[in-house]
Image (cartoon, rainbow, N blue to C red; front, side, top):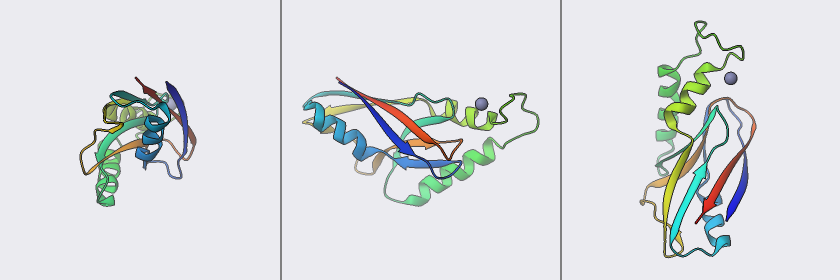
Amino acid sequence: MLFKKHVSSMERNQMIDITKLVRDCIKESNTKNGIAIVFCPHTTGAITINENCDRDVQIDMITHLEKVFPNSREFMHFEGNSDSHLKSTTVGASENIIIHNGDLLLGTWQGIYFCEFDGPRERTFYVKVQ
Ligand code: ZN
């Protein structure tokens, strides 16, 4: 089954926990064992899995991605958001998660995140459950 989900970002760079939204797709599909592909169809967004316990991890990642990829006047792209495109490509457009016994096989401290790199915006992501 294919699910289309929506999130709203509030900041230019932000990590939004979408673990529950993905879990809801697994339940709705009634899949006991399989795989979930979470995919971001935007060129300035991304999907990643990382720590869901200490919120400072997300802040550190965003802060340091901004340092690694600052918005530079050297960029040629007419939109002026090449830093956003670089962050998107670095983090990646999708994640694959094993479904085991009807739930996501995530580590205790893992969550799934939609990464916004050019917000605030209304965003979409897809979950393919097989
Ligand atoms: Zn652009």
